[in-house]
Length: 114
Length: 115
Image (cartoon, rainbow over all chains, first blue to last red; front, side):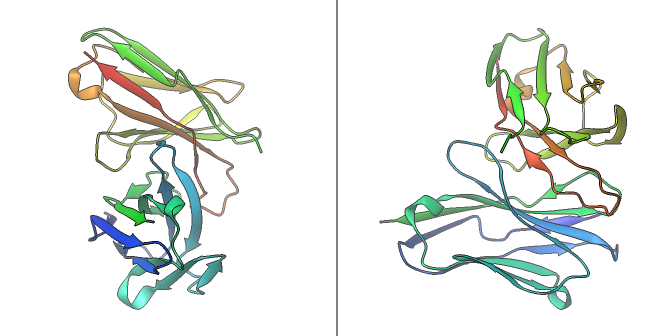
C-alpha cells in the first residue's frame, strides 16, 4: 500500500524567506505519480504540480520549485521569497498507475507573516 | 477556464436525514472522484467513476452511494446521516488519457454539517 508522510505539521516564516516543505512517500510500485496541492483558507484544493516516477527532473515555476529524488523517496517543495498569499495548507499526494485512489499526506500548514 | 462545479456549497442536515451532493466536472472530463475531508485532516478517497462506471472504491460507507450520469455529472447520495459525516466533500474530475495518474482537478467542495 502507498503512503505519504509530511512530517512538518506547521511552518511559520516571515515574508521573503525561503521555505521548503518536505514530502516522503512509500510504494512498492515502480510506476507512480506525485502531486502537490494547495488549500488556502477558503478551502478549495488547487493543483500545483504532477510528476511521474520516471521523470526525476526538478522543476521551477516562478517562485515555486520541486525536488524529486527517488533515492530518498522524497518530493520536496520550495517556495522562494515567500509572500503572505502563500499562507495555506499544502498537501503532497500519490497515485499508482491505473488506481484512482489518491493518497494524501497529512498536510503542512504554512503561515507567512508580513 | 471552466472548473469543477459542486452544489450545494453548504448543507445543514439533521441526524438520520439524507443528503445529495452534486458535481459537474470540467467540460470533456470523463472521470469523477469523490473525497471526504474531516476537520484538520487530509482528503480521503471515497469512490470514482469513469464513463459512468464505477472505477475505484475507497473508504465509502455503505450508507453512501454515488453514480455518474450520461452527461458525466455525478451525485453522491448519503443516507442515515451521522454526526461524524460532517465534513468537506470534494469532487474532482480528470480526463482519462490512458497514461495513468491523471491530474485530478478539485471543485470548491460542499461543506456538510450534521446536527
